Image (cartoon, rainbow, N blue to C red; front, side, top):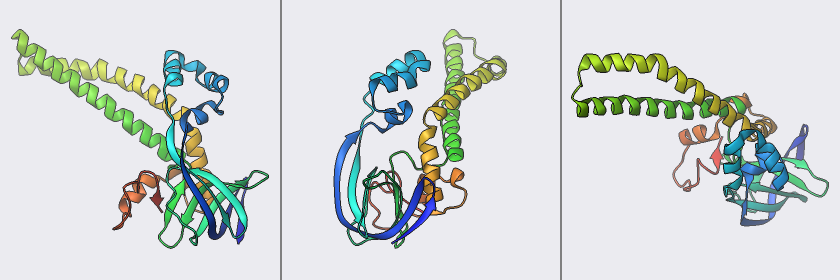
Amino acid sequence: MTKESNDPFRKITGTISGLSKSRRNRDFVLSQMGKDVGASAVSAGLADMGGAGIAIATMDTSETADFVEFQVNGESVRGWFWRFPFQDGDAVDVVAEPDGQAWTAYGVRRDADALVAVYPHCFEGRRSHYRSTFRFWGIVVAAIFIFMMCLDAVLALFKGTFSIQNQLDAYGIYAMYLLPGLVLVFGFLAWRGGRKTEGFAQVAETIFKGFGWADPGGINLREISRKKRRAGDGKDYGMRYFRY
């Protein structure tokens, strides 16, 4: 077995043995946002979000993931993964940190077929994370803007005031006032949402650096995996485990 330093994480190379895997429920999102699973810590982490924070705190955001324990050439390793597609005897690279009793794993890669398992939600670096977040909210803004234009046209038809020129004038006003307002409001929401979940992207970058991959901030395992799908890849491939 070899260990390569990537403080505080290490890359461990070896063979899996004694694998134990079980599906369990855990709240990864609020754990990250509140920095702790305790109710007081979660409340503190969401306090500055007002009513939105109360809504999030009362939501059940728990999800099912694989909790695994195994050995890599005699070293004890354990960790949480969305899906863990590996078996005893697989030669793997493991990005982990010591916790005093065992290694806590955050990423595992099998070189034979380049499959990768990661801690839940840690599938993209920070630059990719914000790009994805703003793209999503950009789609929301576009949908709202188009809906408002269509609604205006429908109302004009019902009122009997519809004309091409009137609609062009109305759309011009929407573009001058409504669209910038939507961009500002939803741009702020995108930034806030990205900040609240940035911890996952930070851990993802640490995992990618541990594997020795270039440009960890720009990596998006979901996008890359879609291009590398092979025959026989399971239904969770590209969403809960990946290829790089």
